[in-house]
Length: 369
Image (cartoon, rainbow, N blue to C red; front, side, top):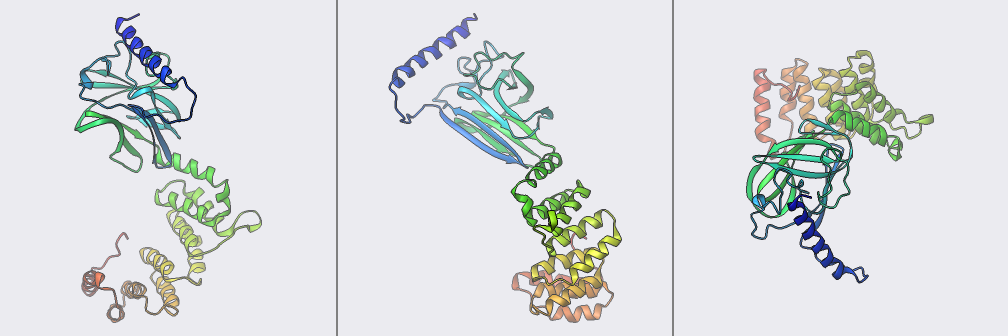
C-alpha cells in the first residue's frame, strides 16, 4: 500500500478511535463538530440541486498546498471536497455539467488537483467515507476539468450558487482564497414541460389556475404550443363532464395569445368575441386590451374598454388605453381629447407628456408591439 495512503488511513483510524471512545455511551445529545454538516438545496428552473457536505476550517493551514489536507494529482487518493463523508450532490432531473450530460440522481463529489486545473469527479458510488476507497475507473460517472478563481478569504469551506441564468447556474466550492467553479445547466423546456405534465395529473388537475399557468409558461417560452392550447382549453372547459370548468378573462387571453402564435385567425376572432362581452375587472381589462392593441384589434379594444369603463369610469389606465385605441383607429383629435381627460398619478406624469407628444406627431408605438 502507498505510504501516504497508509499515513492518511492511520490518522483517520486514530481519529475514529478517539471519537468512538467519546461516543461509546448511548445518548441523543448533539455534540459540536469541528467540521459542521451542511445541507443546501437550490432550484434551477424546476431542477432541485442539493449539496450535502461537512465544512472544515483552514485554521491557519496552507490548505491548497498541503498534500495531507488536499492530495495532489490523485496521489494517493482524490479529495472528498469537504470533510468526513464524501460530499454529495443530487440533481432531481437530468443536467449538464460543463456541457457534459449527467443523469438525475445522487453523486459523490470528489476533486483531483492537477496543477492549475482541477478534475471534478461525479461518482455513482456516493456513500463513501471520504475518498479513501473511491475507484476512479469504476465508481465515477463523469469527469470534467475546470480552473480556479481567486476570491476574498473564506475561513470555512462552503459552496456558493453564482451567476444565475434561467437555465444555468455556477456552483463554486470556496475555501481559503480559492473557488473551484463548475456550471450546471438544464434543458429548460424539456425539464419544465415534463414536470408540468406530471404535476397536472395530481391535485393540480382540479385547479383552473394550474392549467392556465402551465399553458402560459409554454406560451412565454414559445414551446409545446399545441399542448399548451389543450391546457388552456382544459382550464376553460374543465375535466371529466366539465368538472372544475372556469371560463374567465385570464384563460381566454392565454388561449387567444396561443391561437395568435399558431396563426389560427378564425378561432382567435371567436375567442376575442367571447372575451369582450364578459364582465372584467379593471386589471383584467387592462391586460386584455393591451393584447388587443398589440394585435391591431383596435375596435375590439375600444369596445372592451368602453364596457369596463361604464362600471369603473375613473380608471385612469383604461382611459389611457382607450385614447391610444382611438389614435390607432386614425382618430387623433378624439384620442387627444380623451387623453386630456386622463387623470394619471404623479409618478406617471413624465411618461404621459411623452405619450401626448408622440400622439401629436404620429410617432407613438405600443411598447413590445
